Image 1 (cartoon, rainbow, N blue to C red):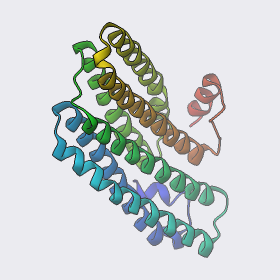
Image 2: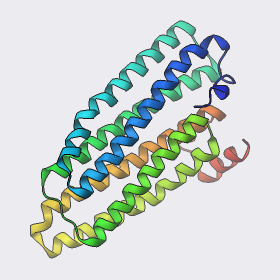
Image 3: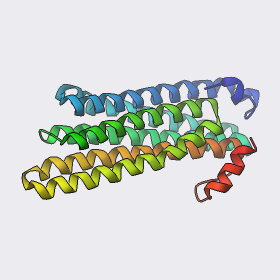
Image 4: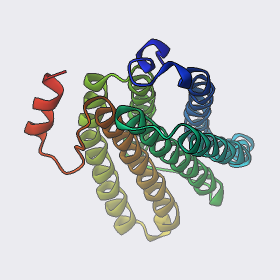
Length: 237
């Protein structure tokens, strides 16, 4: 996160406290990204040890969220920030909530990969791996956009979500077709659809974080705003 950029939003007395929060957020984001990469590797390679490691590490993600949330609550109570300072604090609190939920989804993918010997037809496997790669990229880019408070980069992440939704819908259709052709595959296909759905939800949380970045920088809540209006807001930056 660009500390110089933070100084534009908060007075000097906040810098030391925000530097601590900054370090924690970056560490939490790095851990969540690693969790996601590890669980995708575990599912692909049927690596039960790695899947269990992801499950066990979820408590670390939860602890990050609680520690950062407590620190933000303390800062707000002590400093009583207003305007852009308060927006930044709200952005941080909302972002760690979405990161924690991404961690939960990584854990659920790990559990799905352990439930049965998941085997997939090549087309489903290919699309699921492609979706996983896109999701990891999306998370990495939104964390970078958050670190730099870059609204243009955040908007690009927001646009990626439609591609993720499309990949998920394709995987569901392919899985249903496969199940109709071979009823014995139903348990495995349901697990694959569960993994796909979890990845799609990770994309939603990345989109949320991108919206928080835009809100923090512009003061505009774009959650229920048309794409044309959002593009106009971004162009003004």
